[in-house]
Image 1 (cartoon, helix red, strand yellow):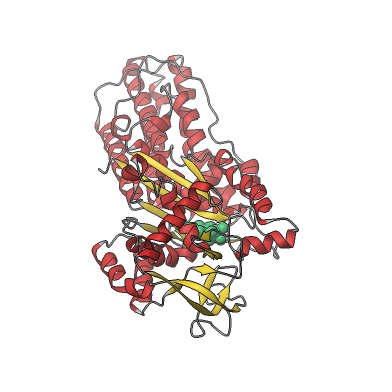
Image 2 (tube, protein in one colour; image 1 turned 90 degrees about the vertical axis):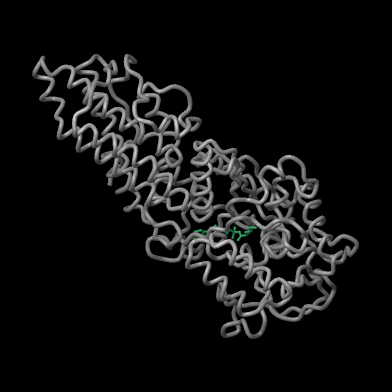
Length: 510
Ligand code: ME8
């Protein structure tokens, strides 16, 4: 196993406040970061905000403030997601920070010096919402091929990055690193795009002032995507290098929405190759959410506010829903009905109730004290084997970034534990004093299967998992437990006294 793991979210534009899409990417990264910490890896998890460019400047003008004022106001809403959603990012980067200026200018200068960046003139189209350049041929019915909004004609002096030169090196890189772009279907999309030929890319603007100046050419500011992508190396100390850089670069996963895959899988590795910096090891593109069957938009008034979700349903439930409802990588539809259904059926009924009813029986039959395990019968061995297999299966799914499969595997264990309760009928055993040892063994097994389930759900529902962990008499933070040790059967301590009940997941009125 690699000793380190570096994962990043995209950095979010500050032209508007966060919505469910931003929360989704950040939560997905957080679950992975937590999982990798529990595997014992040293993790670096970076998120932040993208504050320059025409889109932010335009939004500021519309609101009658400077871009800086807008950024300072909106950034707090993105930073606030960390406590609200229980996110464990190690750093938060703003592209307006001095460390980032040094990094972007440093990277740019490397390519300017080796001739990969040269001065020319840009003539073509620009889509401000996407901050993207397009040629006549690329436009669809005169509109941006990406977002189908009107693009503007531009003609201005510009520095260009020699992207055309990197067609072969990029294709070689994809060929040698089959898991660089995931999921697989997206990889094919990018490979065909690059095989179709690459034009040199305009990487500076003179008609805009809100950005990082090109060193030595104060009339030019660096293209916002060149600026933004560089955040991933700024975060680990570029251009100075040092221990952080050596430890964590190249990043393991840049997590992105499918809308911005091309920037990450084509432009970014080319910029890095040109400057002599290793490309990232992986880019994962996830799908898009619609809301109650419709595209989310301000004009429809159906934008889902993550803060409101947390207030109404709690961070654990929101996190669980987003990662369980849809296969990661596919598009999905958000609906309150589906969310409430998942909370009541998966979280409250299956999982919460497993612990709660077992604590009830433990209280009644053993005054709450955890009995000793004893030699296992066939049905016990089946449960133990299932738990051991689940630890392996959940990890395998997480390695493939298949959250839904990890959760399905964990819930199979939860359901198996519930069936074991019904089949072994502790309430019947309790009526026969000669079955007391057996009763103790059964309760131990249920609690132990629950403990392992709690351990595995900790990356997804961190607060509830911690409450359940404590209710099971386990010490310390479940988030700090190591999967290899704590995932082994038999970790539950006998002789400790547990509460008679606990509500891990309150039911919601439908
Ligand atoms: O693109 N469903 O920032 P951004 C799922 N600053 N995810 C969604 C979504 C939806 N409906 N809408 C947005 C930018 N996202 C650039 C990135 S990175 C160097 C620069 C998520 O504020 C998804 O992760 O527009 C998408 O990639 C990101 O928000 C775009 O955020």
